[in-house]
Image (cartoon, rainbow, N blue to C red; front, side, top):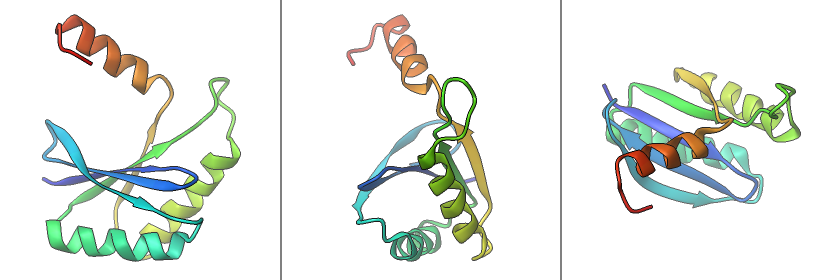
Length: 110
């Protein structure tokens, strides 16, 4: 199974590719809030890389409320799903801390 990880920001879309075990950077796309253009770019990648599922970062606030960016992510998710893609939201809260802790425990240079 091939997964595409998406991290939508205000100026970039970070894209990673994973086989379900290890994820690696695929590319970063710059945008000016032109989300329809980004959807077309993602569709091309899905086709080229035979992607089965998309994991989309969901930036909720620490108090579990929905931020403005989280609403934009939900809209982006709907745009992707309208093209028949399966999109799973991944709560991003504390993911950087968890990743950093794993690297420290593994004695890997960050």
